[in-house]
Image (cartoon, rainbow, N blue to C red; front, side, top):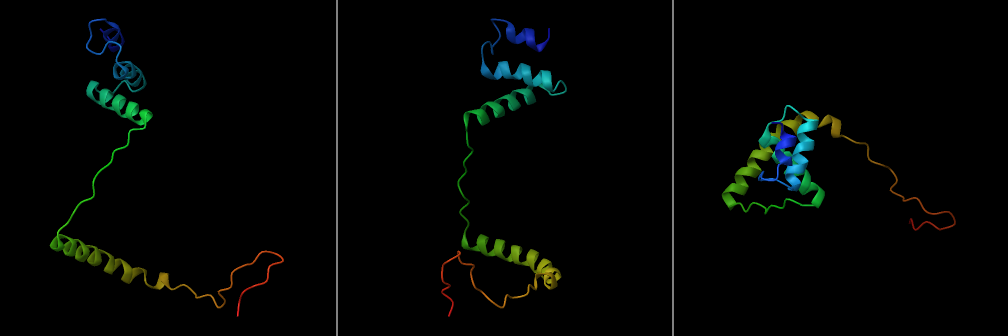
Length: 109
């Protein structure tokens, strides 16, 4: 029995289910996918179509954890910044005037 006839049966647990109907299409498109992977992909696609958004709360770190993360970040970026320092030397503009619209006087001193 193939997957299409299984979901077409009236006594199957997913009869008339949107996930079951989409699983048939997902498995037709990706025949190497396992049954559980097809179910997960179908649920993901239906959630995406419904506009479901995964929200998470930010981590609340202690002072020690924040200091450790900051020190780790600074140690990682210190060596990188030392290598990139010559590349970051941009010439400074001599004039900081903003372009004005035609017919409008400039406000420069």
